[in-house]
Length: 297
Image 1 (cartoon, one colour):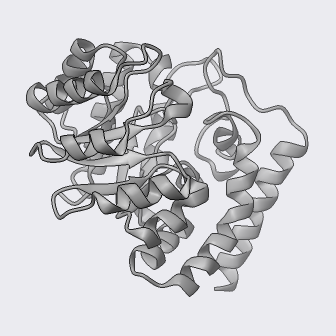
Image 2 (image 1 turned 30 degrees about the vertical axis):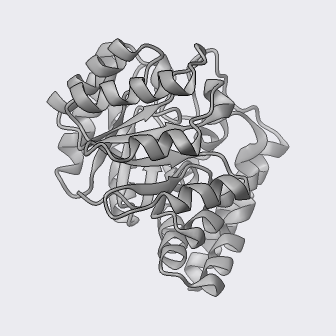
């Protein structure tokens, strides 16, 4: 299994009644495969994992596995605040056919580095899937430090990390930990170009929900070591990436779905839909600009 390149952190489409919209989810999956996305994450933070009931998680993941049908890896978001719950959800994801688990650092409880080390080892030992660590301190309240990652990467079931910190020092530190059996993936669209040019094997992206083909082009250029092409791709994508910063993820990216026929803009409470106004207009203008560039090419 090769987890690298352009990886989409899928949104979870809901109908206006709040129910799962698997029909729209199917269109989104097809759109990703057709656009060159190289793996998908189901029920991650962008997928509103913590708003899903347990049976909804199962339905969503089983649907994705069946729809993708082995064409690209399906990665399940299985991170919980408690280690036991994380192990159990990871085992269930394995039973449902996921190829790997994306395991976020335990949120809210703020474990020590030793607690993080032992947590991830338990999941790797007993979860039944290859594990991608996921560090996003802005959401979890704790930071998986590079020395902890270095201690974990020797486990054969721990295959990489999604690192969402975008500062230059962290990008450098993560790039130094790369080896053939351990990948570094960027978790931040805004700095993905820099991370991949520095050694990240790919990016788990939010913006790819809306523009998979353009994001694949960025990943190909950057992981291929072409700075000039990377700059061009980044410049084309940046207006949309910046526009999506107007609200907490996935509120803004969901606002772009209806125009593409990929579902409603509705998230689940306590998240609320992006209101009509300047922010929505910026998202639509950026999408239109990328479509124009694609047509010109």
